[in-house]
Image 1 (cartoon, helix red, strand yellow):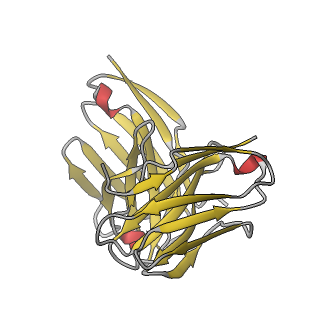
Image 2 (cartoon, rainbow over the protein chains, first blue to last red):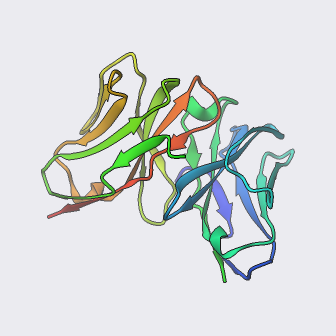
Image 3 (cartoon, helix red, strand yellow):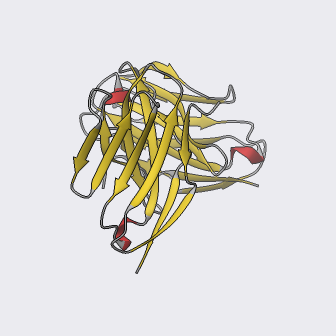
Length: 115
Length: 112
């Protein structure tokens, strides 16, 4: 158990809808990262927050947004969903800002299916 | 744009054999190379990592070999066990920045 929790575990929705994925980082970790894992693209970095502030952006679509709250949990909002958004979404956390060379602890993921 | 190329896509090894997974990169700014292990239904977990100032790092049955001039690194799993069956991802980071760039993953199956 990594100490990172994600809810829900599974999400099935329709095209055009909006969903929110939730992540609680490990106790004490200030950085939260979101990744998308699909069969054809592998693990793609989406965005990082550190102590409430956005710190790095990767291949995140404009239809997607995220935030980190004062209690350090984070939410990833996906809107105007398309079939191609179906994927596993992982949250990871690390202790420091520059998490690229820290151990990143991954949650169990949320499997999103868009029908 | 795939900055870290990983091969093979899948691998079947007999119990007790050596599993070898290879990765190659183009970005010479990369200076940290971790390997992550992912079991079905779980998130990836850090397995072992190396920096380019050494050519090899060993932790138990897992060894990373690093060739800076060829811009390649590989994971060797000695005495492979059925419990090692998982998907393995190589990754790279540049300059301590925030972003990890992952390879596409290798699905390893260790057969009895």
